[in-house]
Image (cartoon, rainbow, N blue to C red):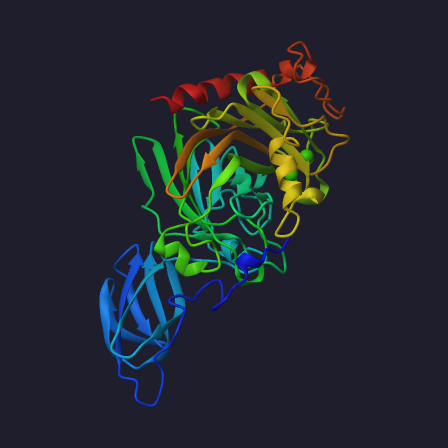
Length: 451
Ligand SMILES: [Ca+2]
Ligand SMILES: [Ca+2]
């Protein structure tokens, strides 16, 4: 979908600001640029040359016309930098607030190259500056259990979002793979507080902005959102991470508008929004995926498992992967447990596919709704999301999810025989006995989250 009001009028997505009349001319006098950044303390470059100044500060005696201003900051070994064009008018002052970001190429592989691994609670998992946990270049080893030498369980995990942006009339949806070989990611990593480990508790912070790259600036996609993730694991709670997620609507802030000038000046209000988290659990080699999914509605949990409960090359029985909404966002009445096949991943131009997946086709008839049973073993993604909520400019909403891994209960299944999920609403189904350790661990994760 294309919407005229978002057509860029004065520059590229990552850059243009202070559009309008320029003061160039044979007699134009120099002007000034007040440069701020978010966060502050970045080195300021003018037309590619270091000025020696750091934000916030004022560039003086700047020749009139279009000038290139860049801010750069190295944080935790990652270079965050953003550049944009600024029109300087003779004698005047132009003020800009430029956000510090790090982005990747169309495949996201630059994220993989900068992945950092963490170990806690027998989990070995990747994070990166663009804030896509469990991602390491799509190689399928973003989450291992138990430990670094353990088996591979996931290729990516990510916040998900869907809603109706004001003034647009369509729907937008953010999935777990917001990039492909031709479209750069919607995610732009932001500087975040450093990691910490205290008394066996690991705390990681991840922050990202959802901003359309130049190729998508005329497309209806999620934008104007900041997503902060606080990932916590404890050495005394095996196989569990919990993730506190905050979605913040930044669409009307000066720093965001520097990146996305075609967005409505008053910002964007999202209605009928669902917020949540998704995982591409891959139990075993990515080339031979034979997984199935199901749900445990009483726990608001989606589950992925190896269909034959026997994975060649694994050191033991394949664990089950649970994704649980532990605490939903304020005001949400429905938890939607989603799943979709790899072939249905949506990107820039097929947003209704994502809305369908994350809300279960908008079926809001109960407190917990879930996707239909899978047809056959394969490569799927799972999600937990809650809504509907409204997210106006300046609003924020928070929720907590848990990612939980546990081995199947012994002697409850036949290795090599496909374990069918059965009806999620039937607590007597055979799957329930197999998943008993996962259910127990998911309840323990809930207790962990309240301390
Ligand atoms: Ca498998
Ligand atoms: Ca998968």
